[in-house]
Length: 582
Image (cartoon, rainbow, N blue to C red):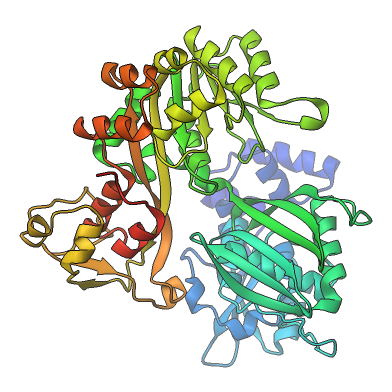
């Protein structure tokens, strides 16, 4: 191929670009004074891949059609290239060649100064190949995720090098390389990487302790000298838009970042304590709202009932459980299931944790008297089909929700009780008339979250008869293999009859034996018999006993069958559930 062949000629001859269209674009290029390739991409006459392949022909540079594996990239090379630099210039060193050169992927071969700079940073000759911008960005995200990201502020004399954590997230792009900024970036990045749901920054007498809540359990991860507390708190306040001068009152803020390709919201709360300001950061991964009802642990029977409940035209569905039991996830999964242009769905929440497309969401604000009750009352003037109330906390909210359900609206909400039947007596205790409770409720779902066994290291064992009895199963039937667990996904190997799995621990699960969480559920369907008992103000235990004769599975029973299916362990079920009524 001639050295001087023009890019336009290659595109016309090899990639099917119309010659007349090329002539028009060339004329426009003179007017706009931008590069030909940029203009063709802007007008969508060619794809980025077409352009790069044409450039590879013109400049005799290889086009890399394969996707290099992140684990094959030499980490010692990327230690010399900051992630901001790599992303801004769309460049990444890959590995050493036998002749001493280094393979480097780049998006723009005309950026010769970047090529020279990379060669200077690596102090070696480089061999360039071309890749699309998004493929390079994805590879950068996955590769830099592998770096060890530990920075400690334990000593005032600590020195920090370029190898310390610096801008490991897409949008944690701070040009200032101060140690405090890198340290805060590190705790945020590591929390997202290790699947933490919360970050706790806690002041002690001599140290600042950082703890992550992973799968519901708190783990200490970092320490810093107490002298750094003010700087750490100020940095987090700046990131979340809070007042750094206000140290006497609690504050709430938000941070939104894209980390390793994932959109994550960080809900920040500060509170003054005797030892200084404490900060709690809740991580809200936007990808988790895509979960459907079938993905969060429902057994087939309960899933069918739940799907039937959420398509009813009116009535109330209550979800109960303590804080952090996954109630919001269940409500969002239900709304996602029924969300359609034909339905007008309104929610009032405290706070709005995830934003759902096609649904109008309102956040309560007590300072301006926008409470659950006030918002719910206003909703009724907006012709809703479905209403979600974050929580029923008082009589006023309960009465408006019941009135809405009786006038042709489907209402979803939460309430704090220990089990499903307890919600009936809780509403009556609030002051709601029993006949209104009985006539408006369609179903009550109690739930808890249990940790899932790590699929890599979980080990099979034979439990004792006492362990089987403790979870309400028949030991004879269990050891005879007569008890069948719920259907499970193929990634979980089902135990052999009479045996279960327990946690062991490996590098994949941070040596905890568990990885991720799933729900266990107790779904009380309101039928005529249950309604009759609730109207008589019968004790919740009596209502639950009646429901169990009709097929209700308690939280412990649901957990036990998940243990039989190899999803979780008996010890985990015993930890989060109470003993069933006799």
